[in-house]
Length: 160
Image (tube, rainbow, N blue to C red; front, side, top):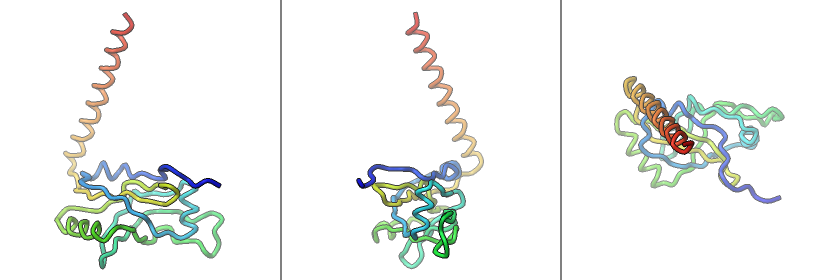
């Protein structure tokens, strides 16, 4: 059987990009049990309430929901257990130094398989205020309207 290649996204945390300004992102491996991997391969996970923290020079992921595997028996895992993130020591030191700054959080952005291995993209985020969220939505809407107007103008000009 050939090895898996490429990137297969399992879950994305769109809420994190709405609630935080993402300043820097890191790709980390995850320490998982067998039933967690099987549940992820079934495409089930939720990153919405998740966050990460550095404790004793190790990075841990909290509150990420990976449901129990349906065919699992007594070997099944707890759905919201804390999971260890695999990062290089220098990356952990850099993240820890950055997180000591006030108002920064380490949030999970995407959970995916990369070449058959479970990976998570975490980002250092600064919380947005309500007016920042409204401004972001307004910019997104303006860009969408501008691209529509451009495509309509090109379509009209090409039709003559």
